[in-house]
Length: 381
Figure 1 (cartoon, rainbow, N blue to C red):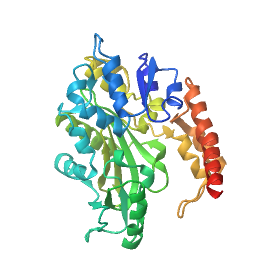
Figure 2 (tube, one colour; figure 1 turned 180 degrees about the vertical axis):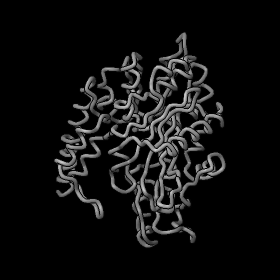
Figure 3 (cartoon, rainbow, N blue to C red; figure 1 turned 90 degrees about the vertical axis):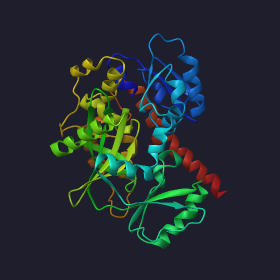
Figure 4 (cartoon, rainbow, N blue to C red; figure 1 turned 45 degrees about the vertical axis):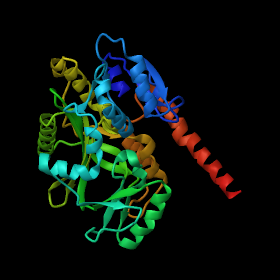
């Protein structure tokens, strides 16, 4: 996100949230005007209150994670006096409600004319599995902020699902969402903005990590006009319903030809990395629309159908070289490097902003494995 604005002459301010906020790779970007570290979302809100009170023009705030989005929307009425924020009809607390995947089923059906997989909420206190739950099924956090994508699992029967409940309870889960496992042809993502300017990218997921329930690690731009038309219609409908902001849809084209919604993220997502190679800067298009300059977006491409555009989250995708799952053979290093050469967008690497990548590679590929190995040795003792 810092790069999207920085390379277009707007150096953003950043608030990096989390336990590695001070030492992580994100703060190493050359494009920040200034950066603060916050240990949690409460401190993030305090920084917004403290640092941006005397501005002549309201600063635009763009959250990049679910916990940040929830905290900002739960303080919407206070913060929007001094900031420009994405929101749903300026209703405080509305976005956290719509993050609930069970609520999204109704929203998608009633407002977008699309389907989501049949869904059930399971209360882990009693562990009762609904009689109508179809198998195979996927289980995932009801709200992304309640858990982690790495906890998503596929199950073929009730017994194996019930065994997993103990694992989830130990991790602090009190409820879980179970959905019908769809026989999909391919997965794709619609990433864009809802505003006076409709700008977006549609990227096909070529690889995930982890292989089941993971996040897209190798992506390719889609040129199918039916998919693009559906994407534009989705963004217009949501804008007309009163939503202004960045948005991200996980979508599935199933083998019967229908499109299903996996989930809606009422914020930007990691697929913003695709902006780098495509030059489709949809966060910038939204920024211009909410600051009174929508016409500036006519100077940049608002979408692309260039299928030669590939993107890679390299620190995740490289695991395909080192690990193999049943049904997912391990890639050769030569094969993987071939994909690196054809990718024009990366999560870490950018030719004019190298330090975040070098910092991130050092931690992800060297320091983190060393730490994990040391912890295993300690555990054996």
